[in-house]
Amino acid sequence: MNTIRSTWYGWGTLIVAGGGAYYFAKRSINAEKKARHEADMKRRRITQSINESSAPKPAPKQRHRKADHAASPSTEASHDPAPISHSPDNGKTKPEEQSKFEATVPYRSRKGDRFS
Image (cartoon, rainbow, N blue to C red; front, side):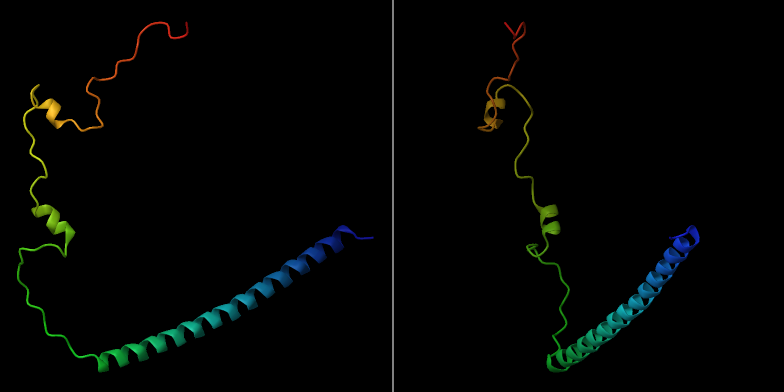
């Protein structure tokens, strides 16, 4: 029959064995990751050195302002005029400015008893 003492001893042994297994597994996994990373970095350095030696050097680009800002949407947007002109709000121009999805008469809810 198991006693309290033997139960604590069994659980303690199990926890220590699990911790040891975790420690050694983690150490081996980290070593494999480090070796894989070093091999990847070595392969990248070799590829980069091959690309640098075989590719001709491009001529330096001249810096000057162009009128065309198509390559940079943020600068293009800042130089665009407003897409529409805003006129003062009066009764005559109101129907012209409405889109086809706007109601001509604003919605008004019916007042009163709706349950009869």
